[in-house]
Image (tube, helix red, strand yellow):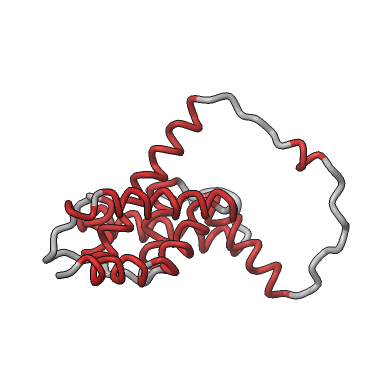
Length: 171
């Protein structure tokens, strides 16, 4: 396969990478940085990609690992609040139900643990098969299915307005 063909395979995945990065980061600037870092790493190591593998899965693996490293690094640093956040924002509340539902979905996704959110986004947003998700996240298939189920259930409860975990009565 020629270098131009490999470049084209990478370029075709950019919209998918941007969508997944936005869902992971929740911030446009951070998502753009994540995509840029992913593409830089992919192109600098394009020779390491196995020709019989999926380019999409390889790129998503790179992005997942970059994001996981950034999350771990951010936890070790003290938090810095932006001065822009302290400035008053124009008060124009959204009146459309779609915006409210999107906000609830976004906050529900943000409330999920990182490992569940990654699986939910890869399966639900990117529509990857469980096998591809297991490869990208380097997890057994059963773990992927379990995290997906728990993540979806938690998200459903969040959207329904249930605050805590469901308790079962045991006799």
